[in-house]
Image (cartoon, rainbow, N blue to C red; front, side, top):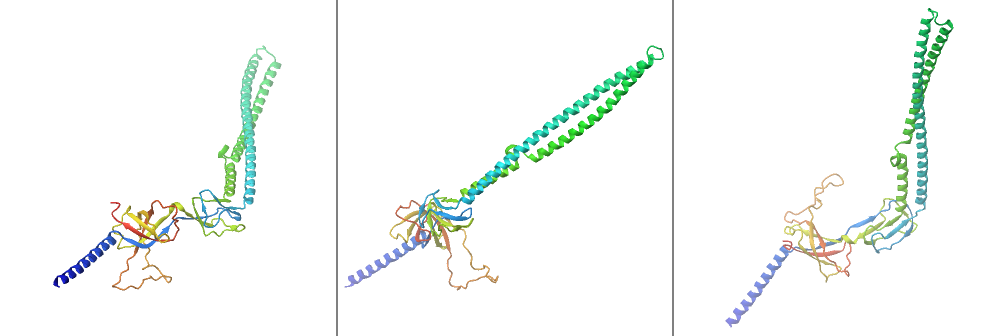
Length: 365
């Protein structure tokens, strides 16, 4: 009888010991491998925004449709922008014609400068010739005047020499006046050339008027291109509200596109459980949508801060302070970013859906 009682106590002790060991192992596992049921699937949601305004003539996608990068999403009526492009091209042609005309004016002004310069050189050469003639006439007049007292010449010869000298002097006065006029014409031609060059501006492709006209054409081309809005990445169209005939406003989001290449999971773990988590630790993710499937991933990063509610300014500029009990301290939750490994094709990730996350600390070490 006593032996049976001892066995009974022994069996009870063993059961209690096993239970205690199991509880300790479970506690150790929870401490070393933190987990949370507060996980969410995230992805980059691109707001597709038209660059120009106008009525929609085509919506090429449906709600929740998968699209590839470059696929047409919707098209804005291009007719207004086609007309603007034609107008810009016509204005560019006018700018080219005006530039060519101004170039010809510069060439004509340069020719006038060259002609005026030649006139100045010719006038200066004429003065030199007249000066030479004056010297000869003066010498001849002096010789005749010396010969006249000796009766070696006649008064008539002296008078002819004097007349020749006077004519040479008069010719020099005219030549000097001609040089002055030629220099004035040269100055005027150079001023006209400077004005023509200033009116022309920089030559060739550096010309401001040509560059402005080219820029207007390029802007019109871009505006026409912007009437066709395409997908920038592979992803899913969601919550589509566009309809043909409605008006698209420039710089106003029109379509939401979920980028499938950016799927990730955020787990919000208690601050008491993140102390041992490091980048690279293995993570096991169980989606609520697929409770019997486990996805593998790794810790990519841990958040360095969360929003503070206590102390924030209220509507009346007074600080907001939440009431708490001294013996209760609620642990804050820190976001932990988990990158998923290969996701099977039959598992569809959806932004905002929930999941459970288990972090196996020490795996990266």
